[in-house]
Image (cartoon, rainbow over all chains, first blue to last red; front, top):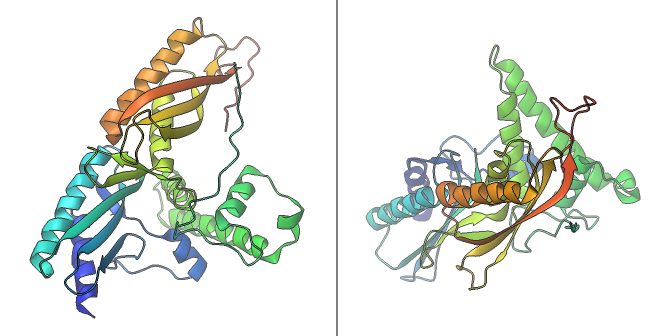
Length: 108
Length: 210
């Protein structure tokens, strides 16, 4: 597992813990088309969380896609998810600027 | 009353979860047409389209089997919720801004539309149809949005303006309380008047815009 995989995993776990987050977007259409049963309970499905970096030492870019619980206010959950991701990045990843985008793709 | 058709738009080109089938059709469109019962000569003959429909059917069967495995637990709502998530992935629409203009928070149009339609339907007898968003007067990717929602109202409604006002209040409330979406305008279009299922003089059941 490369460093970035570990970081992606840590970010996914951090976001999942946020109250109001039902799950990371499961990318079900890909699951369906590939004929596989699932990504595994601990996986960060690629649709739910993407991490990239603009070159060595460049700015981090994290894209989080979540499905929220319908009783929670979407903007507040998204904000909290972004904060959780930022805190996780600060503690796990090397220093650097980070742009964290959170998109709510559905509610359950 | 004006009615406007809103032909289903193509999914955004950058959407990673949609897929172009080898025959050239978008997966999202094939599934949408199948659900709406709108088949054409192409889908009837095309092996790729037929396979795509079979996949969707298989997913529904799998979810239903999951429900059946859990004895005594009515997971019909689970089935619906799972299918809703799949559908929203296929036809998400575009991202709408959440929170303050300087934040990087978004909600996909399909998800926001569902929330606002549900809010409109809290007005007794109202059935909501299409819910569309446009940039508000301030413009910009992070600016407030204008909402246009189509509804069917009960035939017995004494004052449609009052009803529309109530729908508008619910939609604005939901946009703020449930989403955090800044809405400037809510345009309510009453596209039909329908019999209510209970107490209708001739006992007919009403149909909604879906």
